[in-house]
Length: 483
Image 1 (cartoon, rainbow, N blue to C red):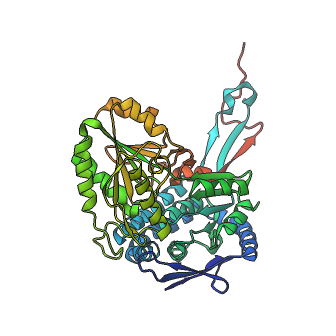
Image 2 (cartoon, rainbow, N blue to C red):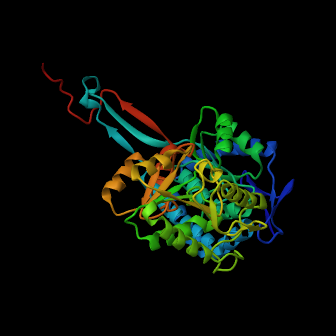
Image 3 (cartoon, rainbow, N blue to C red):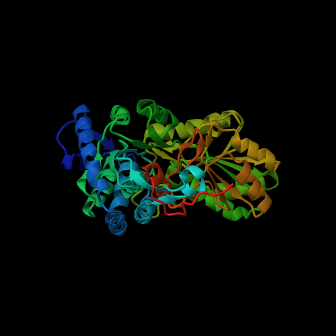
């Protein structure tokens, strides 16, 4: 069992109220985490305010070197971190290992972005009132950032928020998910071991009241949050007039056209619809297939899903482990049953054993089914036929969410049309919705949030533009024109 402390003002604090995390696969306590209180919040905020100055004075090269070392160290600790994810979350170690590979990528990309932070020489002499003057900008750290992270990818999403904030020259207060305290603390320890100064990061474990108190604090200049729309709205209300970056989930659609390679599409959708038991904001949830190919795709897809190995997340051959808890698993099977009652067909799965859901396929659910309308965040995928490409784009857009979509086709006109018309932050062509590169901007529209998560774009959110005006000094010609 791992015992995890809060990192406050440079020290790991372990005495005080504790919260236990029961592993959804082991059914035993795997982690105890020291819970922060109001006094801890006050101490952390005061320390962050003073620590922000020390971090801002570090050179970009120094910050980049630390992040580069952390990228290499993440690979060295890969197996241990993947095992920790498996114990706390039931995530198969092969998925956990993939997440740590992405952590390494994220650190490396953040290091590169630290070296790119700069500014501009502004063309002030292009307008008459600017003649004879010079103006510059540079990107300055915001100061104190707050990172509120989710359970489904606690290591990499923390890496994005914390590494980009550090690359920009900020100090960061981390509010980890209660389901993954040890995994989150391990990422922070890794960075500290690689030279991140104690002034750069603090970790406060706790529930919504801690997140609310931190969000409302005037010392915090920017908040990066990943989670549900309801919790995101609560964070925004508490934050008030602060800069916010929010990724709030989705019910991602993937379209399979008549010219698609059905075997490849079925294989990809099966792999990416059930990885991490479907607990990803871009996990394949809705698949729409051209009616002329629908029956063949459904057969191929169902067969591929049945072949997914379900079991012990510590087994390297396991493809699907457990969900985060029993309630989440029950939601999946109940939504599948609801759709079946309304006329859909469950072609495989539809049951659970504790927190383990048998990968489930639901064919042709009604358009008002919760499996279609809401975010299921679990090991179930719906498959529905469509007759017209333009109409299916409208169907995909008939959602409160708009994070990412997939499209299987080789028709460039369809690709351009979908890119233009789909109300999403990203479109993956000849891949499912569930694909992401950590150096590419990622985020959504509508209730899927705002802002983009990727180090380059996050650095923009974590910095403010400061302008310097030199009156009477010009880099440009200062002779007035004649009329």
